Length: 358
Ligand SMILES: [Fe+2]
Image 1 (cartoon, rainbow, N blue to C red):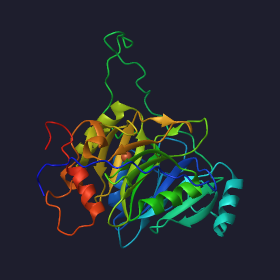
Image 2 (cartoon, helix red, strand yellow; image 1 turned 45 degrees about the vertical axis):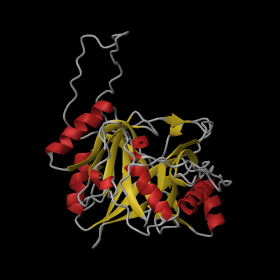
Image 3 (cartoon, protein in one colour; image 1 turned 135 degrees about the vertical axis):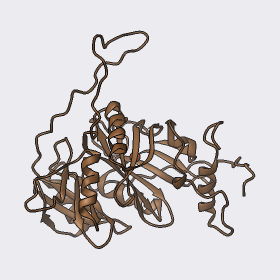
């Protein structure tokens, strides 16, 4: 099918029903990955802007950012390369108790830098989701000052002060979000909203009105949260799509890009600016091809910001910058007999995103 006829009628978009949450999580604390070559992955993380936590003996397994979490990434030596899961931070020990009771699971001691207590759950796709509290934080690491002043035609705020930022790893501060592929958007979205209070910030739907890609933020009330800390895409099998980190500013995204190029790592997509969330982004492949994002200048919202509903299409994934890489694009020919939802998804991604792009 290559008729170029993508004039599907958009059915009314089905709004997301939000369940009453058991608790409200407040941030992503860390991610856990199994790696067959820990040393090579460690080198990627260091070049990407993380720092090894003090190793007790030999190869460090935990990596911190420039922020206050005791660690952001744990590597588990393994025979396979896999995403194990991630940890969400709780507001209180009381919330840990509430979730443990509701799920009928114990509260256990965390293992790893910072200590603390955890409630360990398994999401509908089999990922580990730890809800943690009581861990000790660390002092933030020093970075250069963020570029505060920007010159515009109307106002020159930066005088006698050139922009000369160093080529160095982008200082990542923390895990910003994880993007998961799941076989059922509804089941997985409901599971996370119910347990952790996620608010849908923006939803991309297929022409039949069903949600396909959702961006979810933490409910911190009047305190702003990132536009999304979790994103969910429906797809043929469960997968990790990417892990995102917040870095200092747009300059850090650019210089971090040069640094990773110099170290020989593989760029994936960027630099560009996203539409939903507004982050200036840059995606890289790690030692096994998993994707990691640097971002800066993302949107934050309070609990009052309404959910946005949009038809899914390729052009809606970014505001400016390059088209998505070929590896993210479906083949031109849609196989016969494919599920109508898959067909609609492929067609949405085939839609030419800009007049000058195929
Ligand atoms: Fe992202």
